Image (cartoon, rainbow, N blue to C red; front, side, top):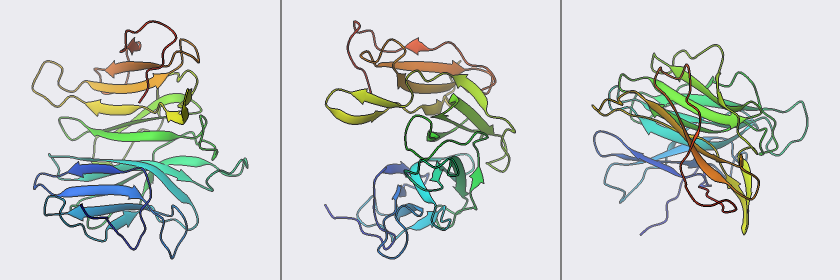
Length: 257
């Protein structure tokens, strides 16, 4: 194996996706020697099945603001790459003047360049990197090129969508479900555990084509009984089902990640 390097630095939150040509894309946070800590989201590309990687392109550079918790998806219909993440005015700040937002950017040239980020979140979060910070934005692509994304924050789990390759989004985020106990969960033996939502859409040719699913964990049944839940929408995210518990263990056990 070889260790990846980039002049933009390498930090956590790794995400790897592939495109229709077999190229791989490795997204991660930044920590450049010259620049601010977490000042951008970096995308490094490999066109030889991971043997070598380029220095990377980036998105989200915005002064001293911090860019965190990214995730990406490739749309095999449009050949676009979509990325969503959290921007902090100032990471870890408890000031009411500082807030967090969910941002979106796309690449139409297979990771060479990225669009100016758009703000998706109607309600901002705080900067404490905790339950009231907006985090966990994972983009999903529908069968006709729709973009779906949900995240967690002060309003619980909320949802947004775009029908025009990310150019426009809903004027108001759709409430999906409360996030009991918040996304930052205490699991014995673990410093912190993220119960953030993961969104995906069925693009198969089955009767469930187009159904959107959101998977997350919460402590609805008590702080000592973390469970995994699933909700779904069959109308493009306008309405959502009641949560179904995925795990079937007896009370008092933690199911997470």
